[in-house]
Length: 269
Image 1 (cartoon, rainbow, N blue to C red):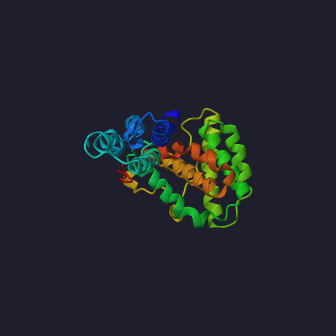
Image 2: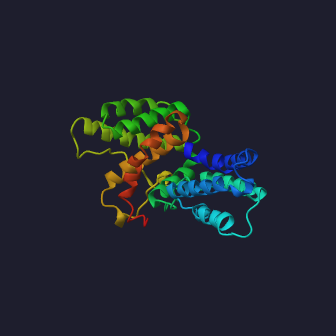
Image 3: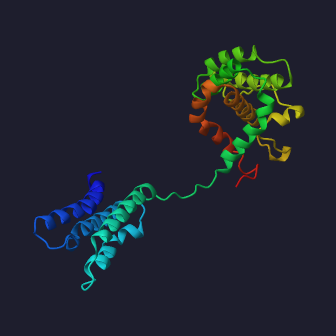
């Protein structure tokens, strides 16, 4: 910060010092003392060198000072020219600070899995508006509890959420997803790792599901049903429980990893 202030101090302070030197009789003409502008140019170039992005104009400031003040031996720069130069170099300093202080950003290529998830969330928005925030909160708790292996809590959260579901098509599909999740959590809690829920999604549920594959693409129907249930429930919680938005965002990688296993059958390159 001190070095940054040195640029206008040297540039304008040099002008004041030149006038003072003339008034005291040390120099005959204040225009002969241009070293404040030269020093400011050198400092500006040094600051430009330190920035994460290079400003060619500021880097060549000492060269401009050389051409304006030192090289012309027969016609010397006036005091007005020094004042204009001081103003210009100060504006260059401001430009340097605001335009070259941050590293050049490389556009990040969009992750196809994230895009697929966001597209699914957007598609499900009108379907899931019937889920109230309190129910969505219990759903969020169930999903996050499953992620952390708190299987007994999953069963409790599912029971609370299921009791609050609306009596419509959306409530029916969400209810299936909750049952699939609860059954799997109960099996894992009791160390029955190979057991999944007998509840299945049917053809009428497909508009609600994020991963829809042909029979020849499905290697494990139970795992697919569980993954679809988790993704649907995550989406319901994400859309309808504002209190859990931050937590769900922080653990979004959990559902991205689920989707990742379907990258090839979904043709997501």
